[in-house]
Structure formats: structure tokens, C-alpha cells
Length: 264
Image (cartoon, rainbow, N blue to C red; front, side, top):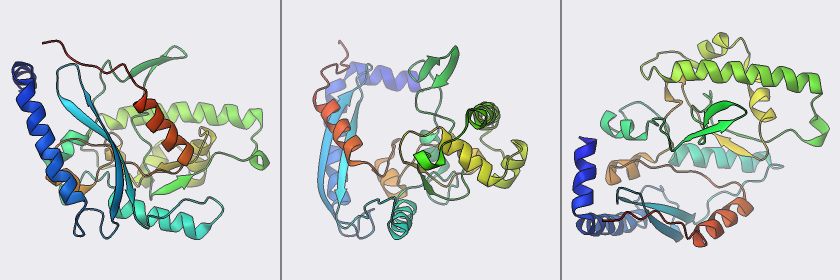
């Protein structure tokens, strides 16, 4: 059981950390191999930070540089297309056991807990933004530009629609076996795809990747199938669009002194 595993970690954290370090070392060797999970994109550099949760188990935050990976340029349609192809090639949120076993996919399925809940405007929301929006295909969406400014009436209508969509997603996401298609989801929320995308863009402050995702995959965190099958643990993998955000992420972790270490 989960409780038993936590107890075993607390009883012998040193062995657990040594095992984790050895496992990670082997994984890095595979990730760096030409036949590795990045399908021809060579791993040329990495930044790694190991953290420990309260129960004593380690996890890693890693930033990877892949040679010849496409760079996002919102003004270049070819760049956008290459980025989407790259993302679809390496990242998945599929709930189908054809890519990974059902057991491994279950590790990717987010379960709300006290650590992810935030109080915003009198409502409790998940700080990770889960459930995620279903999408018919992977898209990189930008916020509205100054030329596309919405009127107050439009924003109020979109805000109301967004709340309705979130409530519907909360209901749908509780049923992981739902067979609802994306088209059926749009009918449920009484929107066409253009209106749906407009609603999503209205809530953005910067460019963001939205992965192809069925309605029954709204709680699944992104993963690489090969890394998942090798590492056999949950992960969250993202393609970086914004160099500034990347730099900010690194600096915050380098300067993060509030490391959660258990007392034994």
C-alpha cells in the first residue's frame, strides 16, 4: 500500500536515495544514447535539481537541451508547425495502454490533494490548472494582441462561459472511463471550436502549449512514453516556449533555500 511504502522510505531513506541516484544515472545514459527517447535529437546539456519531499522520497527537476530542436517564433507559421510536430513526437497524454501500461498511465493521473488546492476569489482551484482543457489537436495559443482587444461585454460573456466549461470539466474528469469525444464535449458546453479556442486565449497572459487531449485525459500529466516505461514513475514533461520563463525557473530553483527535508 501507499502507506506501507512511505513507512519503508522513512525507515531507510539512505538506501532509497542511493537506489534513486543509481536509477537516475542509468536513465541519463539512455537519454543520451542515439537510440534514446528523443528520436534523433541529441541531448547536449542538462540542468538538474534534486529535491526531497516530506516523507523522504527524492524527485528531480531537469532542464534538457536537445540539439536542433525547433525554436518557437509566433510570427513564423513554419516554426509553429515544426514545434507542434516536435511536441507530438516526444510528448503524450494518451490514456491508451498501447503507449504505456494502464498501471503506468495511472501514475500520471492527477489526484487533487491539499497541496494543490488554492483559494481564489472564494473558490477552491487546482494550482496546476487541472483538469486541463481537451483539444482536438496540439496547438500553441497566444493571448489576444492589442489589435484583437475584446470589449468588456465580450470579456464578461467569455468569463461566464469559462466558468461553465470548468464546471463541466470537473464533472467529466471524475469519470476516467468516459467515452465522450471532443465533438461531443463541445456540444455539452454549447460551443463550436472557434468559440472554445477564443475562450481559452482570453485567459492567457503568454503563449502556451495545449496538447491534443481527449475529454477522458483531462487529469493526465504529459509524459514521454519511452522514458515512462523505463523510469516507471510519474513525470511531467514540457516544451519551453519562452527563454525568459526558462531562465526565471532556473534562477528560482538555484536560489530556493526552502528545501523540504524530513526529520528522522
